[in-house]
Length: 121
Image (cartoon, rainbow, N blue to C red; front, side, top):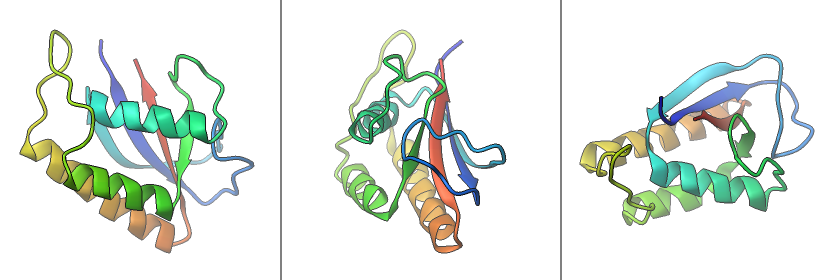
């Protein structure tokens, strides 16, 4: 049990930026127990009108501006750092992976896909 996190892409038009559930998606990236990134995505979800208070299985779309902000935060090592019983301390490998995700997401947007984030506790 733990936090599983996924980025997906779709070519389907999205009706909204939060709580959008396209029928056809492809995997783009995944993380496990990356609470700092999850907290950032949760905040973005609510800013975009999301309504699932638990933010479990909910989706949020990321646009180019969101990726710009996320990249700045990642490079500044400003994501929430959480370690403890269920979460490992962040390290440089995590930062590299996050930047890899941003690059993949940018390419997907340029190729005409929508990029979505979801998670499961």
